[in-house]
Image 1 (spheres, helix red, strand yellow):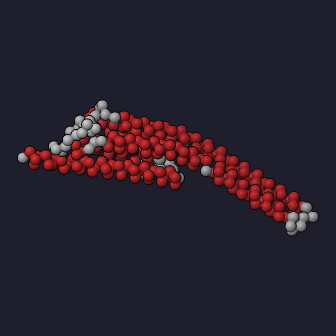
Image 2: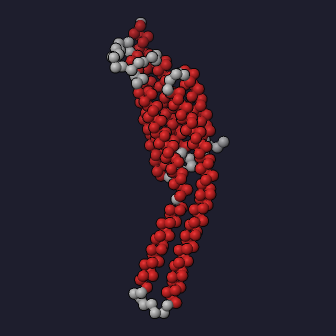
Image 3: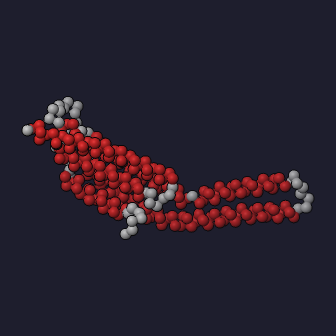
Length: 242
């Protein structure tokens, strides 16, 4: 296997491994379903990608044939009009203006049609990629929601919960693992987004991929700040008991 591209099979294997680790430690937590959803997205994307690539082969072939047809019709109409005009000896200089205007309009319409037909395969790829990226963006925010209430400050000895406080059952070790799993899931969301850029050079797709990757990095950095706080609390606990 080359190192020129990111392989969906390898990303899926990593997600499945992470799913097993989460299920082993937190079988009743919603984070397990998040990992399952991410794995499902990669499987659906890989399967749809193969079908889409097959569809693109004939779509691209049909669009190119239609482009040739449009060119042939446009050139044929222009040549016929010019031949007719040249054969008419009564045409004066001013009377050529409608013919010139008609020729220019034909060329413009032909160019628009050719551009539309040429970009059909790319638009199909863009539509499929943007749908997946939208789901990945939503999944990143769902992961962030899972870690949002996991406040390490609640591990401090002097912390006093209120009646509105969210129920908190994790100790320092469990919280560290939970936050680390959230960070890994976010990283894999970013890798899954990067898969969309492997088969596309579309600027809209590439910009959206960069946006999703930036979102996962930002959310992950917040999680690592929490992990650092947990580590500091663990270091303080022995000295406090001493």
